[in-house]
Length: 191
Length: 191
Picture 1 (cartoon, rainbow over the protein chains, first blue to last red):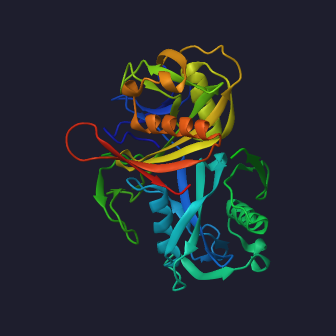
Picture 2: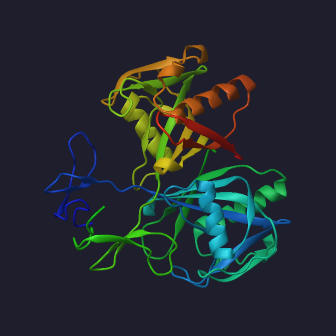
């Protein structure tokens, strides 16, 4: 972020009067350009205990499996965003049952909100961002080929709930560990 | 939003290739400037069934009462943001108990996430954005002077749960109705 969206003058990183952290502030008109976390909203679409996953047709993590989810858009609700992403990525129609998980990913300033949902029919098929869409039972989940740790965590929590016969909200933080390689730490929190 | 943050050239509203809605796109370098909803995170700090509220020292709604809450910042968790806002607005230290409510405000592209929390001590006092900080029992809540409908809704839900002896997650949409005046509609959804 280098230039002001309101007057095109250069920005500089500085702590504005009365604030406690650096912001991008315009050197000409003084506009403060706030940056805030984004919500990723999606569903775990379920049919008789099996969960629908999409194989990604796009980077990052092309070829790996994920739940239908994406960035929430302005002027929609979290639930509407989850239904939209489920339609776009899997051409699937679902009924939202409950909020399944809220996971913080502070290293990339994202908050995942995933809903447990019931497939209304089995006429799903890949959207433009998916190579393949399939239902998996727990034993068939390709754990080594899940695109993102947050989705693996949400799936593990779903099957735990399914076995327990009781669904609950799951919350936690998924922190990327320093150093090379993709290593993460999961911290569960009160829900 | 008029100019590109990357190269200062003018932006125009257009539907980018492969997308389904208008975005601010740079006429020179092609950068797409996405805009997404913001999370407002906060707490209902409780002491023996009474809830801490802050009287706002700033606009909008100066002089009216609200729960400690504010925009979530990058690189923090929703819970860390809620604790930070509680400290900043009320100098209050709390322990988060559970997620109390998730409310969509699609007309202003905000998602409220409010946590039920227990006050760790009673040494709270107003921060720079508050005129006054007080504990209220249900009968004393100044319902006519609550700053935002979303906070009134969260308080009603809290006292309902308290009377029922059972706390649960509340979800819903708070929609501003068209026309003059501040009129809203609350739509509850599955949690």
